[in-house]
Image (cartoon, rainbow, N blue to C red; front, side):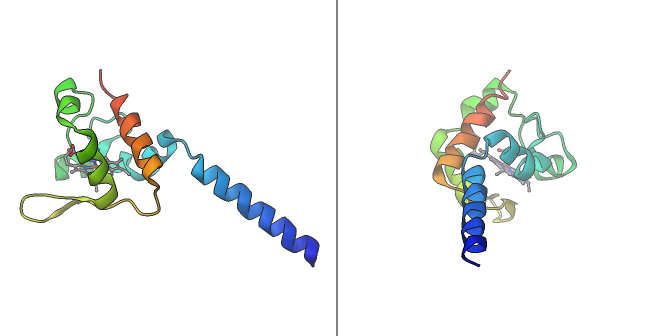
Length: 109
Ligand code: HEC
């Protein structure tokens, strides 16, 4: 019984570590690509509907400010009428958010 318990704890730790070390690319592809597109172009059904910008565009990148991007991911984003564009990302650490912003910078062409 004790052995089982220890194995369980070790198993849990392994999961936690792999999630924490989760690379931004897979996180992005899981949670963000359905709107922003795997390539950042926002060329998806949802992205077009909601007006996701083209993050391969240098102008869009220049427009994306570090703190605003961080806030949008952490707290979500609404349009001027208060309609939700993007939900707040749940269960994500500040470091992961920063890594996601950094990852989105790589879309720039
Ligand atoms: C339901 C669709 C949807 C999902 C899912 C989504 N977004 Fe967005 N996101 C938008 C829309 C729409 C905008 C506003 C237009 C734009 O800036 O592209 C936006 C804007 C942003 C911005 C720009 C904020 C700014 O002020 O410039 C960032 C950064 C961003 N999203 C990152 C992410 C990340 C990272 C994820 C995944 C954790 C994600 N988004 C998931 C739709 C989505």
